Length: 430
Image 1 (cartoon, rainbow, N blue to C red):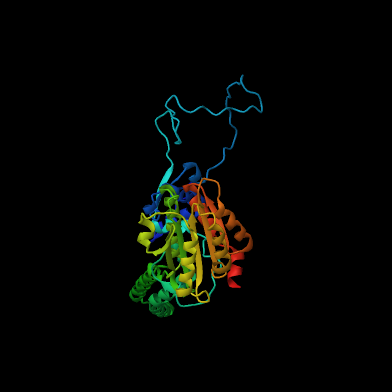
Image 2: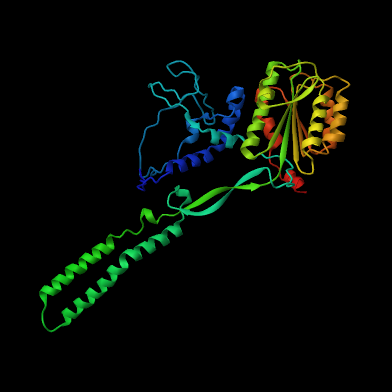
């Protein structure tokens, strides 16, 4: 067995580097666990951290060992049950203390559980919204919405090992060694020259020679004691986040709160909008969010009333679209703002109102907005509103519609609606 021992000292922040390396290595499994957690959480706990469980077989590390060499003799037991090519059945679970759970059970009283670790709120949200962006974002006004980009910002004396600049550190080491040893080396050269003169002199000077040799030995020891590299020499690349002005954007959130929307359906709609709110506030700065609740009448409300009000009634979807159009005309001119909308409903609407909704979107709203997403939350068969919106989808590239049947569908649908796309980016730059 060959053993490799790492004797390097643990520098400041090394555990942070190891943690980030671990997150990168098991990223897909962690993302799957994060996705599953969305459907299991309460509405108010969507943005907290999470405990992630990974099977121990997936985190096993490779080991170095020597192969079995030389001549070996062994006795193999006979076989009277199987022939070449037969498949051996897996032992059945349960019985004899083995258990039937997912753990690695053992009849000797020992086993191994899955590896469980905690990710922070920031790590959780980074994984939640990775590779997502507002579609078709156009740079029309550079004074409101701000994104952050990472830039190099010189060097610092502390940092994580991955940011260590080796060349800059060696330059610092060389400068320090020159500064600390140049005087001693100059004096050493003078003493060695003097010693050579005394040795070449016809007269003997044993005492002076002994003193010079002792002084030379001490100088060499002091020069050698100067370390090749020290902690003061280390230089780490420094990075800073700078605000980069992009565009002004507003997101309209339209939620159906009519009597046909039962509590479970409303909770799913709220989960979707909470994800949308967290995505906007984490990815962009100063994005305007307009909340509109509607039944037979539509009303602009604040965040608290949007998520917690108990008001209900009949269903006229066009009331919300009319209100959205009025707000755009009064406060958000389309030549200055990137306008987005997300509408959630169970699809139930007055039959004669659905064609009016389609007409309003086709003629007034879709020409103004960068992206409009319709989410229908229902387990029933689609009704007239869905059928009318299908016609719009064929005519407008900036209109998307998705169907949510259960809580498990919310996060996958959310990612599909706001997934980064090269095609969308090209359209937005046009």
